[in-house]
Length: 65
Image (cartoon, rainbow, N blue to C red; front, side, top):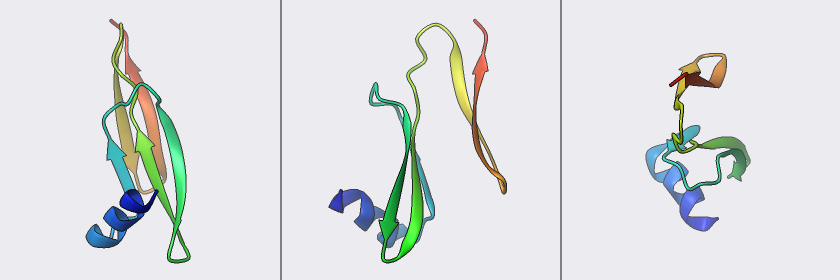
């Protein structure tokens, strides 16, 4: 995905988080020899969801509705 890889370069980011595309997943990209992580969030459907991010990584959490 050239556009995603260029966005990592332009913003000097190691992780990208973006809204849902009805295909939630974690994608790993090799950008100039460095592993970058792109997290696609799920839609909310019935329960609310959010991403908790720390130095240790990212964990998806659910708020029961």
